[in-house]
Length: 120
Length: 107
Image (tube, rainbow over all chains, first blue to last red; front, side, top):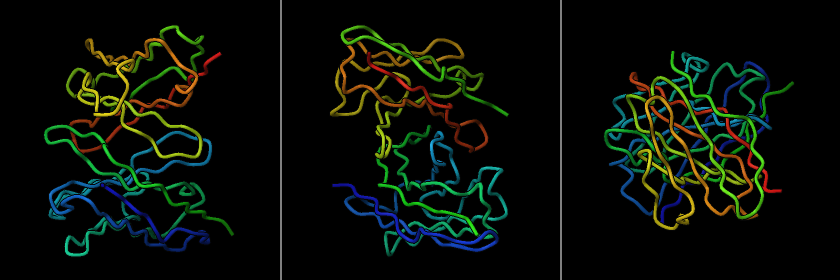
C-alpha cells in the first residue's frame, strides 16, 4: 500500500525556518517525481515545488522561489522541503504528493497533510 | 503566464447531472486531471489525462476535453459527491497549475 507521511510542521515566527519531511512507503520511491502542494485555510490548492526522480531537476512557484528548497534522499525514501524566511502567507497545510505522469503530471497519491502556521 | 478558471460553486439535485468546466489556453496543449476534496481530507484523483478514471473511482465520474477547456461530469449525483473539485495541469515550463476549485452542493 502506497503511503506518504508528512512531518515537521508547526508554529514558527515570521522570518523563521522549518523543514518538512515526507516518508514514502509501498512503492519504489526513487523512480517517481515528487511534489509539494499547499492549501491555506479555507482556500484552494496551490502547487509549491517539484523534484525529479534522481533529485537533479527542480521547479518552484514564484511565491516561494529563493526561500524554499526541495530535496530528497532516495536511500531513506524521504522527500524534504526546507522553508526559510517564512511569511504569514505561507501558513497552510502542506501535502506531499506523488507524480504518476510520464509525459504529463497528475497526482495519484497524497499524504494526509501537515499544518504550518507562521505567526508571531 | 497560464491560468485555469473554474466556476466557484455549483448546486445540483440528487440524481441529476453536474458538469464542471475548467478553461485555460494551456489545456489545448496539455492533459488535465481532476481532484475531489472533502472537508478535512486530502484530495483524491478522480480523472487524469482528460478522460481516464483511476481504479476504484465510480463510473458516474467522467471527463472530456474540447479545445481550451475540460469538463468533469458527474452523472446521477449522490449526496456523497458533495465536495470541492479542482482541475490541474502542468504548463509548458515545469510549473503546475490548479484551478480555483468548484464547490459542489447537493441539494
